[in-house]
Image 1: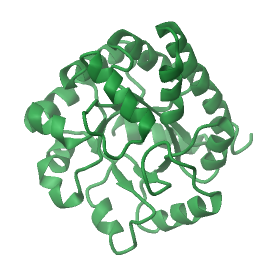
Image 2: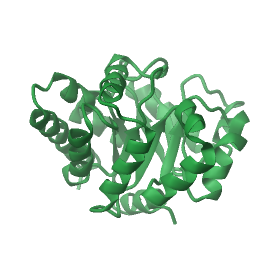
Image 3: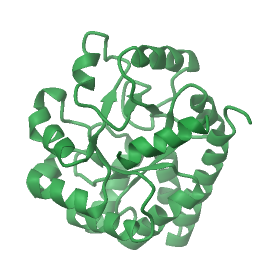
Length: 270
């Protein structure tokens, strides 16, 4: 059983949703990013998405675009991101960690090499935003054959006819993008989210995590009542962008993570 499967099964038994946190590897620099990464589980993150920096992150809004620019400016690359996972795993063997990003850097690195090194480093799954299911053979299939979960994004515009194709080969969890547009955009209404989760559950037994536009513990709690996971990224990254020191960046991200975790864990009552 994968770490993702185990974690979501544990949380289902506890009758609560997962807090899924996203940060970009190497933002604002390697050491600070690693300190944030290592601190997230103790601050309440149940699953971590680690962004692989890329020059053209077309699905991301300004906050994560700037995080990519900061990370690339600090010389972060895919090899260093995998090294960061190795260092994280030296002190944490339980928290699921998913690499999220775009296919270009993986293709450039070499797909077989990337899959082998990601698995060896302790990566649990992949979210590759710009690789549709029609191209499963390029990365999804070999990644899953190696034991890496492949997590798909679904959106408000993914209709019932398209959903089975999108979900084909999915594993780990399904990431529902609750608003059309880029990361950091406005939040969806709870009614919309409830309808979307019900529709997705008709198509898959995988856990459903909701992201895009969730910024506060109150919003996180509201989503946690409806879904299996709550994804927060831009709000955390804003603390890095606004920090005046590396220490302040670490403290800001981990403090918000703790507040979000409290919201998620109290969402369904005792």
